[in-house]
Image 1 (cartoon, rainbow, N blue to C red):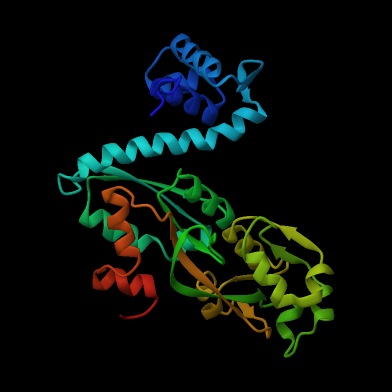
Image 2 (cartoon, rainbow, N blue to C red; image 1 turned 45 degrees about the vertical axis):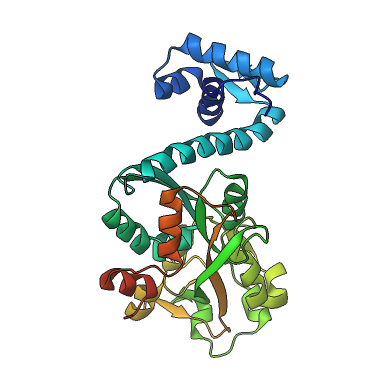
Amino acid sequence: MKRPAFTLEQLRSFVAVSETEHISQAAASLFLTQAAVTQQVRHFERAVGLQLFERDGRRVRLTDAGRLLADTCRAALRSVEVVEDSALGMRNLRAGSLELGASPTCATYYVPPYLAEFTRQHPGIKLGMSVEPSTDLNRRVLVGTLDCAVVEGEPDPHLVAFEMTRDELILVAHRDHPLSSLRRISEDDLAQHLYLGRGPQWSAEKHVRAMLGEAYDRVAVLNLGHPEYVRAAVLAGLGFCALSQRAVAGDLSSGEVKRLPVPSVLRSISAVRRSTRGGPAQEAFWELLTGGPLTTSARISADGNHA
């Protein structure tokens, strides 16, 4: 096997600077001097034959080449951590780390019981969690910067996927919104009001298009990103939206919001991972996600009802 032209320390310095775009912050995170980090990055640039940063005042910015290489380098560092974790795992998972991802809906309503149970079983494992759109999570699992993730909608076909459950997406509005008084709602009715969306990068929007039909391309749209921002805007009476039934269950019970008479959509909630075997912590968490024993209280919370 050919020996790489760069060192692990150079790789760590490049990744640290790429994440902060600031030499001093990267140096502090690595417990090194600024001069040492600058030298490591310059050596790494020479080794790969690319300019990875350009200066912007007191900060540095990734070049296009640097941006493309950053994910690969993070994945390489994660692979090194997995090797270390595998050795630690021989001591019954008393130490190690696990990098997880979840879309906002999954992070709020589906993943917490599994995290709680895993932490109870393996308190020595250090957990990291990224909350991002499902498309980004699929990509990060694929390249190896995340060990596994829980996503909404369609998993990447190149990943191993396990459907954990299905989530019901429903259309809602504030009780005083004009749509809430209608017994039947047409596409023309919807097109007259503001739709509160997540944004095209979020997988939920594909399902909303199916719910709204041609009205989806006719409505005025305000994209708010995170579903809790969307929920807050609906509670303020700003417009109508599509949210997980779990997200508005309390608001429906109180009568603050009304469910609109438009057919709901069921979307998959799936755990995804690469096909290759991971470290001990990843394998233990995957077993939990795909049918390992949860405690009774955790199972009730994860399923939304009694086991």
